[in-house]
Amino acid sequence: MAEQPWLIIADASVAINLNATDRAMEILRALPFRVAMTEIAQSELQADRRSGRGDAALLAKLVQAQCVAIVSLDAAALEIFAELVAGPAAETLDDGEAATIAYAVTRDAVPVIDERKGRRICRARFGERPMLSTVELFMHPAVAAALGRDILGDAVFRALQTARMRVLPEYVDWVVALIGIDRAHQCPSLPRRVRLP
Image 1 (cartoon, rainbow, N blue to C red):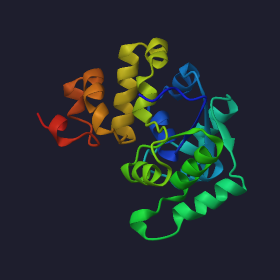
Image 2 (cartoon, rainbow, N blue to C red):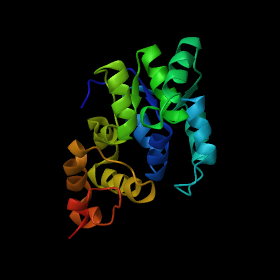
Image 3 (cartoon, helix red, strand yellow):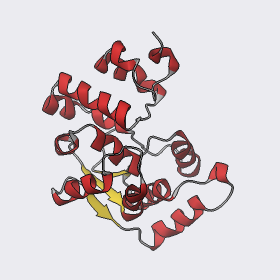
Image 4 (cartoon, rainbow, N blue to C red):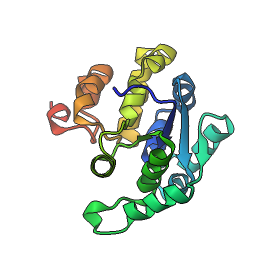
């Protein structure tokens, strides 16, 4: 896991995953760093219907509780944002991911992105700068200490089932060990090798 940053910038999918756990506030309060989201990523939650959970309203509660801050792109970040959304589809990102990366790059913060394409483009454009994924937030020792292993396992299982949370290959075994192989079979976003009995 990357060295812990003082500020992380969450993409919209991260908020969806956290909301699906039913423990988002406890998880965010346990983490030893500040969490922010761009206005652009926040606006994606208004139209997102994947989770069926009213993610925009749930995010609003996290903002009101000061668990997440909403931030705007300045001129420098908007320039990077424009570069990330213009061009061939294979080399461009959706607005939320682009805004997340642009803000993080200009503020020396760490983006939290689950999508492989977003991570690939970020790495190609900005080198080996730190990035995190939703699973890495769950893996933080402070989260396990706050929730306990059983409750954390239930939370991660809900994120996998309800939000179809993406898991980077290097963290699949950790997830399966946490939720158990029987529940792993029920998670469509996990690789076939762990989903099939």
